[in-house]
Length: 349
Image (cartoon, rainbow, N blue to C red; front, side, top):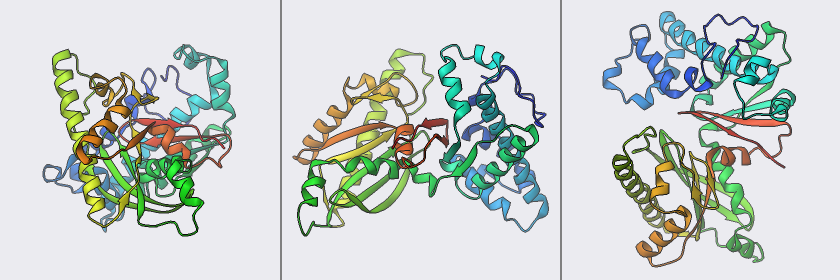
């Protein structure tokens, strides 16, 4: 919560608003729609969730007016992101009071951080490069010691790449590592269930070493509304989401096996929700899956056993934890995903 604006060059009236109130993909999309004439976009004919991709194209338009409109949007959100980071960095008394669940320890942590790694769709080039520029300009004008802003490599798929690190200790991969000629036709599936898209891939491991990640076509997320007040409607949506969830996994298994690849039993699944020991917390769009089974990871295993007549087991990860796992070499860092909502993960060595 931005209870008090930090001293900086940003003139936007952001005091009294939360970070989620001022920065998200949905707000980007709304601003693109509001600027459709300036961007020369017919938004009525475009898929709404894909509008940020058209903003990328606008940055390279032959029209200086279109380019200026695109830069105005990125400046707007780059400054907002800078204000959020400044509030975390300086930890003013007013902003501390607005976050009563944090102690001095949490504020000291964010003050001492050296770098922030940005990942997610909005952090991908060229959008991420422009957001980074405007964040750095605001910090420069404020006179505050800046975070080093790092744009994650191939940041749209950071969650998938982070998930792959959890395969190193899979029993089947350890066993392969002891063999001279590990069959490269054996792969592990990885999914990243986000609020906007479901990303899919399979990973080729050689023993405990990652050899290749093959990205499959992503699909739109569905049934992930989270502010459902009617219990009956929430339960109905939970069953619809669960069915869509399973259909995506089932379709992916069949698609990969159609390539004459053998799928190992360990599947890694990142989800835009808090999870612990296979259990999904009552929070966010995927939180309704708690109504399907208390241990959703075990439930998925039983479903795939029924579908395919063989054993699979799942590691379920919070999406922030998954994306940060790919940056374990970065000390004193936080990994922040710029997508449908903020995701945060903390790299560890």
